[in-house]
Amino acid sequence: MYAFNYQRAESVGSAAAALSADASAKVLSGGMTLLPSMKHRLIAPSALIDLARLPELIGVREEGPHWWVGAATRHQEVAAHAGLQQAIPGLADLAGLIGDPQVRARGTLGGSLANNDPSADYPAAALALRARILTERRDIAADDFFLGMFATALQPDEIITGVRFCTPVRCAYAKFKHPASGYAMAGVFVAQYPAAGAEHGGWRVAVTGVANGVFLWHEAAQALAQQSPTPPLLRDDAIDDVHAPAAYRCHLALQMLNQACQAL
Ligand SMILES: Cc1cc2nc3c(=O)[nH]c(=O)nc-3n(C[C@H](O)[C@H](O)[C@H](O)COP(=O)(O)OP(=O)(O)OC[C@H]3O[C@@H](n4cnc5c(N)ncnc54)[C@H](O)[C@@H]3O)c2cc1C
Image (cartoon, rainbow, N blue to C red; front, side, top):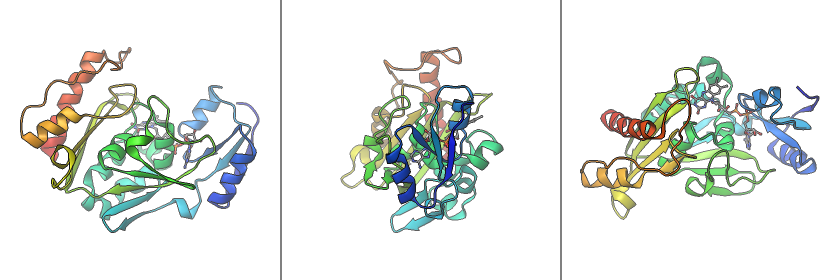
């Protein structure tokens, strides 16, 4: 690993100022992706600005029709939150399916969304649950946030402070895990909102692990609204790699959709 400076942030403001002052600095949250990337010499930031202990970035709370989850909230805290388990069970379940206990004890929501791995779980929840990604300077709809493999709408010096999820009528998540990492070979998040005036009768279906990035599966939402069979998933950008061919991932997505619907 290269030499680098380490700084524990005292506030989001001081972290933002440190990032703006040094184009090659990066924020550190759970370190579950950033530190292995540095060890493998894929990146070499000049400084790490540690957000992990900032109280303003940690926690889960109900805010009217939404639930706010702080960016530095660890997966295990989301999985274990009793209020969230009741209000948005699919989100708590999803957090409990990430990686293994060690990863869940360190990894955070903000780090996962900022990283936007095409097989990560939280991006599917954010899309299906009409989330708003809150940063120190703006509020970004999940629909506009995910821009493809490892790409997001974040500016290089922008910090996610939290995520506001819209409480659905009901929701569920199902994933077919890669047996080694736990990442999704296919993960499907299904959410239902009140139908009045909503697209696809209020149904939202988001898919991870199958294509170059998380996406909304509109045909599946439409089929749920019409109570008709879901057509097979067809994607030009389906991942085709040593772990699974593209057609198999698309097939798995349909199976995960069925599993999630059964769990509603
Ligand atoms: C063995 C293993 C198995 C895993 N399995 C899964 C899995 O099954 N499903 C899954 O979804 N994920 C999985 N992960 C990923 C893990 O869950 C973490 O969420 C992910 O690595 C990033 O979160 P982090 O908090 O560790 O972020 P870090 O590693 O600290 O940071 C990741 C990136 O995000 C940036 N960043 C961090 N916080 C912020 C912020 N608040 N604002 C802006 N940018 C920020 C950092 O600068 C860095 O570029 C796995 C990881 C490992 C190591």
